[in-house]
Image (cartoon, rainbow, N blue to C red; front, side, top):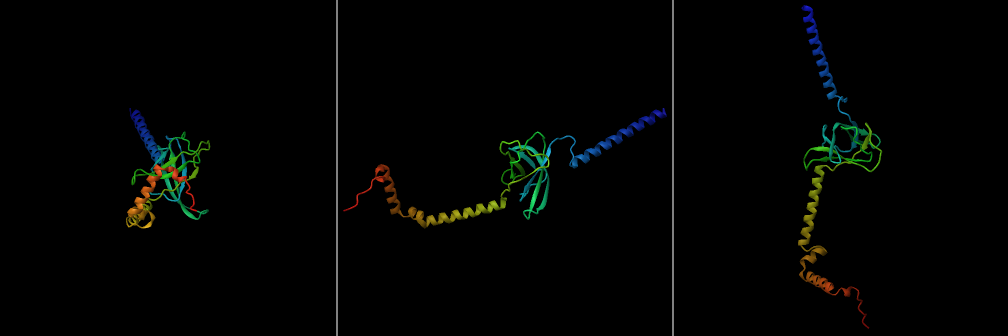
Length: 206
């Protein structure tokens, strides 16, 4: 009886230890770079500007979610003598093929929404990226800089409209000078009715 109880206790302890080991490995693999269940591959994209993207951001290929960003590193490019960003992306299906000449950008959902990595498929080729390969990304214009450009363009438009209202410049004079405007309108109407006048060369006076 005692022997049976000991075996049952040992079995319970063994099961408990096995479950503990299994949980431990699940935790290790879930936070590490090794994946037991999912199959896919890593690619890297080099940018000059990260545009606020973070780890675990969506990765899209032709508008379809195909993975997520896993790591973002800052490094110094000795060749170009400048600081750059290396974005490591996980593609969650090994059957997804990305051509080497594909274009990658950091995009935004809406005007001020979530940042994500967008990959536009390249040309018809069988030169596909393999796990660990890297491509050069296309830098997006920072939102702040874009807003400044829009403001500057609006200011320029206001200046031009002000000059037109004041009759400055050739177009401005045409808009505010009634006689010039009427003469031009009469000339256009005359040409519409008598287009042959464009081809007629008047005789020189003797």
